[in-house]
Length: 285
DNA sequence: CAACCGCCCTGGGTGC
DNA sequence: TGCACCCAGGGCGGTT
Image 1 (cartoon, rainbow, N blue to C red):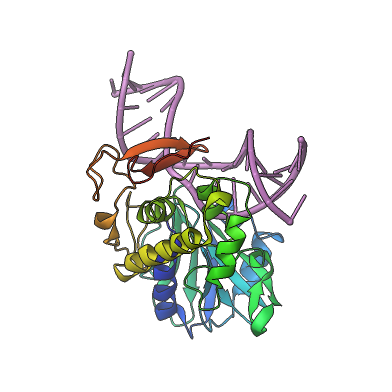
Image 2 (tube, protein in one colour; image 1 turned 180 degrees about the vertical axis):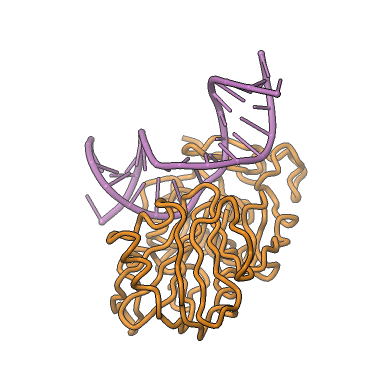
């Protein structure tokens, strides 16, 4: 389940391997992998061939390779992988897209078991500070690794939300890049119960929550990301090492690292929250 | 505009 | 061994 640290790890790996290379050939193997590309498979392939990669950009969980006026957007979804594989490597069972380069070096191979991820070409539009974003990424808020994020303004906005704090944390239009794993870890670090109303946090608490999220994701990035269920790997196919540092996620029944009370897992909008019932007491209502 | 719900989809795991 | 079922979950479209 790639979140901000994992997607940033992939971005760095891609940047190191595809920058300055020219696309020579594109093959797609599953319609869902390019379903977001409105003008179809032929257009997708035709428009990519001949393009030279300048850099690899990212906001939240969205990656893109910007060209002059458009960009190739990559989203990993929950099981997407970008791997650099030998040009003669056999087709992987869940291989969805393969991009070959004019230098006949390693291919960029998109593998995705659950097909929530995919690629699309989209126009670039100018936004603030002279930045250019793909049109379909403009609604995504800045992430916590973005040097231009305004942490205080984000904390204030979080407190205006009439919803549970974890929902707000997962809302990519408020702050992007946080998924279920790092939301649970950040809430544990900040000692906040996930179903506490966002509006009930003090401003200081809201700031410390965002700071905790930033810290935990920075640590994860330094270790190459988390690999909880082996679906996430970097472009070389290697797992990250942060999984061992998770305090609550996936640790139901194990002792809280702070107070030794068993970690509890509870239902949260068709998924799960992991928390310490003592460190993160439920709000009274 | 904000919140919420249901849907997309696959395959590993589990229970019978 | 096989089958039915559950579960993971980010983003988005439609609705309230």
